[in-house]
Length: 299
Image (cartoon, rainbow, N blue to C red):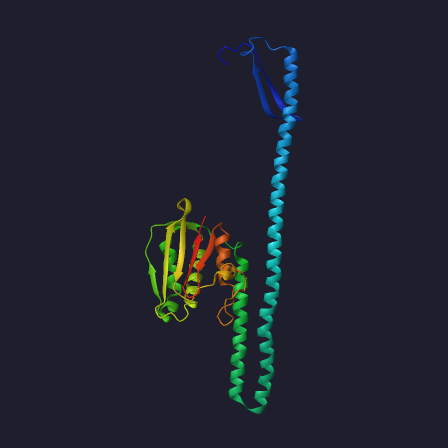
C-alpha cells in the first residue's frame, strides 16, 4: 500500500454471502476513484460473484455426476456378485443336502437288511456332506464379517506376522516337507494384526495346496520396495501354477481351478476382501507348471 492514497474494496457476493474481495487503487492512473468507477466496480463484483457461484455449482454437479456414475457401477458389480453368490450358495448347499437325504434312505435299507458295512459307509458319506456344509457356512460367515468386525490397527514388524502365520500352518508345512525361505526384514506396518495374519495363512496354505507333483516344494516369502518406495509383500511357490486367463477369476467367490481340490473356493476371495477393505491391493503373476507369486500392498 506504499504510496496509495485512494483505494476501494468491494465484496463479490452470492446473495448475502461474500465469496471474494476485489481491491483497486489509483497508482496506475494517479487519479482519485470516481463515483462512476466505484459503481462500475460494484456492478463487476456482482457479475463476478455470480460467475464464481456458477463455477462452484458446475464443479459440484460434475463431482456429483462422477460419484453417482461410480456408485452405479459399484452397485451393478455388487448386484452381479450377489446374484452369482446367491445362485452358487444355493447350489453348493443343495448338493450336500441331496446327498444326506439320499443316504438316509440307504441307511434304512441297510439296517433292515443287516448290512452293517454299508451302514457305516453311508454314515461316513453323510458326515462328509455335513462337514462340507459346515465349512461353507463358516467361510461365508467369515466373509460377511470382513469390514464390519475390525481389530484396532497397530504398528508391528512384518516378521511377526510371518512368524504367526507359519506357526499356524506348521503341521501342513511338515506334512508336505515344504522348504520355507524367508529373509527377515525391518519393515513395520500399521495393520489389523489378526486379519493380516489370516491373509498370510491363506496364501501359504494355498501355495501348499497347489504344489502339484513338485518333488522339492518350496515357498518364498519376502518384501521389496515398489513404486514410490511403497512396500510390496509376496508369497512365491514352485507349484503347479495358474494359467493367465484365470489370474483375475481366482479372486472371485467360489472360483476353484479344480473341482477336485479341497476347500470351498472362498479362500482367495477372503484374502482379497481383507486386503482391499483397508485400501490395499493384491495380484498374482504365474504360468502353468512354473509356480505362482501373490503380491499385495498395504496403505
